[in-house]
Image (cartoon, rainbow, N blue to C red; front, side, top):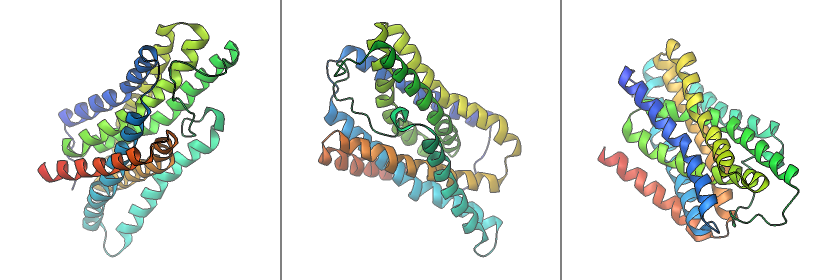
Length: 273
């Protein structure tokens, strides 16, 4: 399936990416107004997000990419390009993980079971540095996620909406992770919320970058390659971040149940639309 670019579809993709990014603010607000994070809910929600991403990657994005490439290239050449793009998307996120120190890497799980009560009360300067480094690291991660969300949103609302919801869900714990150390080091809710929202803004910025540098060169071949690369990014995020984080909350069956529910919801949404 080719992606048909219109002004309306591009603006809709930008808007959906913005909504997904701003969910970090929801996580920040949760950290302020709840004494403890509902870990069962987060475990199930992260599992659901992973289920949606994995299902849509292998059942929608990759088949769409194959359909495009088979019409452009004969034999197995098109499939070679798809595989290169798929694993290239994985490699991009893996490289970002590699260059960010583990302590500040949002893809390395840090327990936030008691969002309103960081244990140990580390020194304020160190706590503030942790929050700022987390904000920077998450912002860097959200940039390619924004591009991925934008490209997938161009593929149509039937694919875009579940992906945007999945990205939004997985951004909520990131908002908590950023706001907690900044809030407890400064006592300033506004500052903590601002940094949390800024990390989320990296996603629409990534979308704008994709629009500026990809759309002028848009071709069916680029479209197919990007769909495969987005699938690679989403699969990597699911296995590297979402599922380990869901399991670390200690509710295995909620996590697996979330994965299954996410796949079922995605399957029926694609069937209905």
